[in-house]
Image (cartoon, rainbow, N blue to C red):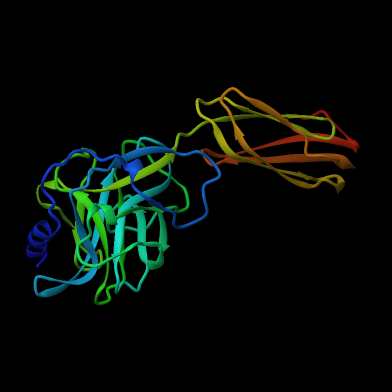
Length: 311
């Protein structure tokens, strides 16, 4: 049945004819999913040359109903995947959310997932034209990925009659680092699009990993020097410090956030007043949107307001 469905879809959607590249900036963009990112991510992978659309979901195609799920494989070149876009629309009868998941194996668990309500999509009657489609943003929880490894963007909806969306693509091998896969049994089995030449109209965004160096100092309360020793801006830097042991009355736990830190830039963070006595341990955890969590500990002596002998 899947073979017949594929043949029908090729005829229906017009996938297979090369077209001139379109400018993605000329299309509308619909924002969906989680709130906007607090940093400037960058375009990583994309295929934006449109030549047809497929119905994703359960609909009557050439005399029988089938529930079509679609996956697009891609190879990221950045360490953090932040969001994706697809060029899409929906049928007027669509009633259930559209789900997008990122996986490193088509049939394994999701690395990240986001669900978008039908109201976020433009409505079309029948097969859409390019002008009726918009770029829909899927802003899921950021995930760490391995550059050069294949991942899959899996999209599907509830297996309910006439609940379907339109997702666009191209039937030629314009994007060499991936291809389209189809499933008609709710993702239990997948079949590569014939010839491996089809790709969805998609865009992925991400961040490059960078690295931080942390130095602790004592004196009138603790101070922490954070330096970006990597090649890329560190975004949304969070520092958590805890002072334990001895007799600490004020300043046991502090959290500091820095929106961005440029390469080779350093800042000195002074959490504020710490009051207590005795031998203490300073525990520090530092993370950022594109920095893996770091932790360190140092011992010191707290004499009322002063920290001495940090080591």
